[in-house]
Image 1 (cartoon, each protein chain N blue to C red):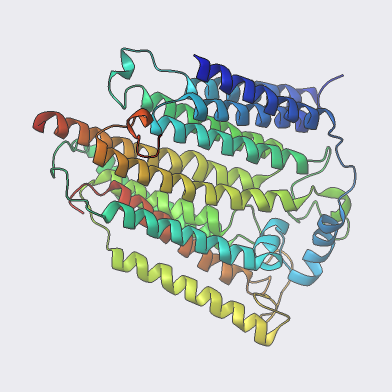
Image 2 (cartoon, helix red, strand yellow):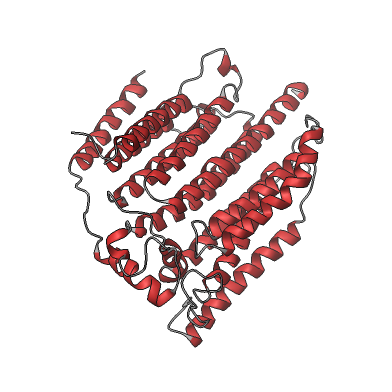
Amino acid sequence: MMPSIAQLAMATGFILILIGFYGALTQRNLLRMIVAFTLSGTGVNIVIVAIGYMHGRTAPILDATVNAADAVSRVIDPVPQALVLTAIVIGLGVTALMLAYALKLHEQRRSLDIAKFTELKW
Amino acid sequence: MSPLLTGMTLVLCVAMIVAALLAIRDPSPEVAKTDTGGLPIAILAAGLVSLIASILFLILAAPDVAMTEAAIGSGLTTFLFFFVLGRIRRHETSGDNHD
Amino acid sequence: MIKRFIALTLLLAIGGLFASLLLGYTPDSELNQTARYYAERTSPDIGAANIVTAIIVTYRGLDTLGEVTVLFLSAAIVGLVLALGGKSGKTGRGTVPVGELLTTGTRYLAPLIMLLGVYVFVNGHLTPGGGFQGGAILASGVLLLLLADPLKRFSHVLIATIESFAGLLYVLIGLFGLVLAGGFLDNRFLPTGELGALFSAGAIPLIYSLIGLKVGAEFASMLASLSESETS
């Protein structure tokens, strides 16, 4: 049996989430950890969009080929797409914040290694 | 289901996973001597993952999300990382001369 | 090594969870109730061709207002964090000279990129794209200008003015909807027009253009505050 596009994409999204978690847990460099977090975010977005996909339907945009009357049987679920659009934009905001704090930490310690930040370690 | 589309999706998925592994790969010891060694490759690989993800969104019939991912996820995020990297590198060089 | 082993064990557990989710997934063959409502009612009620835009700007308009607020907050915090005690480094060193090709190319390309951004958010209710994408494209025009001249300083007053006026007008239009039509951010106080025309879908093009300007200004201020060297 051939896997469907949605299943393939969903599996890839899950694998990306795991890769991102692994990177965030094992890397010692702050910037590399942030890179891993963005990978995880991309994976989550792919999974959500793949859940909304339905075979044989088109994008939720009405035009000459998809008229308003039969839209219900022709378009895919628009709600996950709206959610993911929001998530991507907020993701950039979160990444920018993390980067700004990493930059600030580097200014103070001259290092990006998390092993050097020991204030909260006991 | 058209096998062509499925094959294309498969290729994109494999490319994405490879790029993601490249992005979190441990840097070799001689590259990792400085804090920022090997980071450009990791950042570019993460940008590549986003770029391929935007193609995947297009295949999944989500053009709005594809545009957002291409413009924000792979464009602006990558440049934010590089701006920060540049500033950190400038700190490093000026720090070496002064300490 | 033991740390790596713990991480792998944790990931294996999460991966097992994901695998059970993946194996138990059966694709829907029909739209669920919410999606069916949006697909049926968007064209007669809202008049927008792009259903995703209708959801973002009208049905879930309040969420989008919250989202641009979050974005504004994160842009503000980035600026604040980078401005605090930012006098530590030495200034004006290590900037690579910019090539002729980039400066000349920027002069021609930056206006065109900005124009594309405006096109994308003005047509948000008809074609894929909209305020967030258009705003990001505007910000990449700003990014090109920054790359061509790393010492360029954008007027933060101008960016802040655009940003806050767009936000204020956005809320005002929402209040117009409350008074003249069915509720906060209701787009129907302007005529919905015919499906597919540029001036249709009531206030959606107006609201999405304001979102585009606001998002573009926020991204531009993030980029500007991150790229400005220690002289800031």
